[in-house]
Every structure is written in C-alpha cells, then in structure tokens.
Length: 453
Ligand SMILES: Cc1ncc(COP(=O)(O)O)c(C=O)c1O
Image (cartoon, rainbow, N blue to C red; front, side):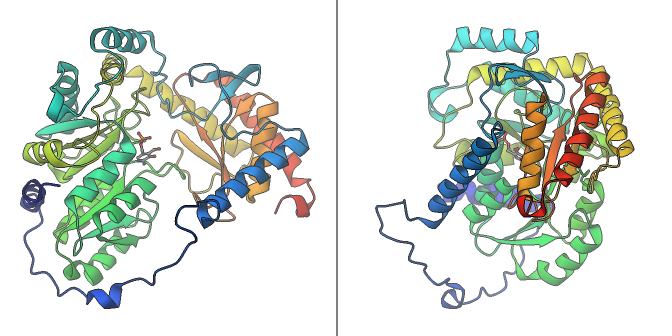
C-alpha cells in the first residue's frame, strides 16, 4: 500500500477532529506476542479446527432435519426474487428473510436500469477503476450519496462487508484504536484485525458506557475511531448515533456510522439515521452503507470529506485498489432504486405502517421480542438452538420463511427468529404469520426438554 496516501488520509481524518497526539509508548513487542498455536499439518485443512467444526456442524444440522423429515431452512434453494412471496420447496412462501425493505430489488424500473447497463457496459467492470477508466454511473451515484449525507464526496464499492473491513484497515494501524458498540457488525471487527489496531467495546447504545471507556482508555492511543450502526441487525435497536457521536467528539475521536440497515428505513424520505436525527453531515466523519439492502442491489458505499474519499479511491486495498470496480448493472440498479425511493417516499411510510401492524400482532400474542424497539427488524426470542431451528423449519412447512439465528451471532440462550418486514407485505399476511408463529412456538414448548437444549 502507498504509505503516503495512507498518511494523507490519516491526516485528513485528524483534521476532522483528531489532533495529532503524543503516542503513548507502546508495550514491548515481546510482551504482546501471542503464543503460537500449532494447528496441524501445513497443507491439510481437514484437521483445521474451524474447518472440522464447520463441516461437523453442517452435517449434524442436515442430519437432524433429514431424520425429522423437515426442510432445512439454511441455504434454502429459491426460484424467485427475494420478495415478500418467494418460490421455494415447490410452493409459495411468505418471506421474512430478505433485507429488501422497500421491495426494490425486483421493481420494474430497477430491473430495466440494470438490463440497460448490462447491455451498454457488459456484465463486469473487468478491472479496478484506477487502471481501467470510469463509467458515468459511478460518479452519478456517488454525487447523489454525497448530497444525501451532506459531505464532500462518496465512493461506491463492491461490498458493504469489504467497505468496513477496507476503510478501517486503511485508516487505522498499530497504536490506534476503534471503540465499537458491543453489537457492532463482524465486518468492522474484520477491519480492526486488518488494521492491527486495538478494538475496545462499550455497552450497546450506551453513551455513559462510551464516556467511561473513553475516559479510561482514549489517552493511550494515537488515532481513535468510534464505530456505530444506525440500526442493529440482530436486535432491531435504533443506534443513538447523535448522542454517541457527541460523546466521541468530547474525546477527540473520529466517528464512523454503518447505515446498512438504516438507509431507506429511517428518516421521512428514507435518507437514513442522519435524516432521522436531523444531524449535520459533518457530525460524523465516515458514513458507510450498503447498496444490498433497501436499495435493492449489491455493493457498498462510503461518504465523507472529499480528500479522504479521494485518498481511499486511489489507495485503499479491497475497496478500490487491487479489486474490481462494482458491476455496472449493480450500480445502475442502485441508482434506479434511489430514484424510486425519492419518487415514492410513501414506501417508507408503508414499511413503518406494516412494522406497527406486525409488532402489535406479535405483542398481542405475548411473544418475546427481546430488546426490539418496534423497527422493521423484529427478533422473536426462542431460546435453544434446536428449538429455534424447529420453529423455523415448522414455519417453513406451513408456508412462512424466517431464519433462525444462534450463537455465535447472538448469545447462547438468546436464539431467535428474525423477521424483516417490508413495505410490500400485506396486513393479512402479517397477522396470519404472527398467529402461525405463536402456534408453532407453543408446539415447540411441548417438545421434551432433551430435544430442545
Ligand atoms: C451492519 C452491517 N454492515 C455491513 C454489512 C455488509 O454488507 P453487505 O452485505 O452489503 O456486504 C451487513 C450485512 O448484512 C450489515 O448487517
């Protein structure tokens, strides 16, 4: 990686709130060196502990569903777009497993735009932008996103995951720190590992916890980035972004906000958590998001100060450098998705109306919604990995698809089914799914304890 571009980006970030600080003497390398774990013969992975565990777990899951004569909800083969009604298992299922909040992924305008781009530019960008030139679609979407976030510029990427990993990996290094909400997405964790910086957690969505962590630890590091989400995908909680960003500023930290599940969902026009709280663009240093959820396409984006974006475009591995540019059809689809969102803000209103209907139907049936705040992500807690899997598979047999989530994605004992509501669900379907779910959980409660551990 070009050190000078990285240094430039770090300086720009410093200009947005982090002043150069006298670095604390780092702990001696020898003291921090982890003990090397010998995992097995170098060329074989069959005895690699994580490979062996994943293979054994997959086989066990398949075995359980096969012996119970139930469909396996994992990797379910589907023959339709990921809409509110899908075709799978030879029938139609009411679907709650897609992040397609506004039903845009199969909207005729989105499909037409993608098809046109496919015909004009081909299926692949075939190289990175820096070496193979630009097509106007990239700049067009970037300017729209920069405007929405009220910042200097934006960059589109091939993946939301890689955007978090690559941006953090590019901006932080040994001696720096990322202060992360305890429920932060795995892609941010990957970014900190890539960066080689420290990662320190604070209690989920808790400004007091962030403040005490910063009081205790901030001075021990050079650059510091507080990383938050607008809408947390496992619990359906709303990021207290404005308050947490203000605390971060008190301690001279930069702030990065992941809008993966909040763009298209929050704000009267679906412009995300900034619109929801009425924040200024500059209250946050790095706005990150995905094109693969409400916008109905695939890819990621980052919006920030123009020079910072320029540096990342030229030199951040994985988001721009050493990686292919996003497929033209995906960017055209996202642009068309944005057009539909802006032309039809009633989709956002309908999403929230449907959410209220479903939330009320679940609560009336006294289901455990955990920490949910009544957002379009509605977790229904069904403790026990087997029980949650049983409920998901039984629902599938009865025509409803909602994924079961277990450890390590959520704590043991907090296994759940996650329901993603969209603007396109009908009230009738929402209420009957709630009823079916309540019946199925009651059925699972009758299973012998030995089967539901
Ligand atoms: C909070 C969050 N950030 C980032 C990502 C990664 O985005 P993508 O799926 O576009 O790679 C996800 C994906 O689910 C997510 O939930």
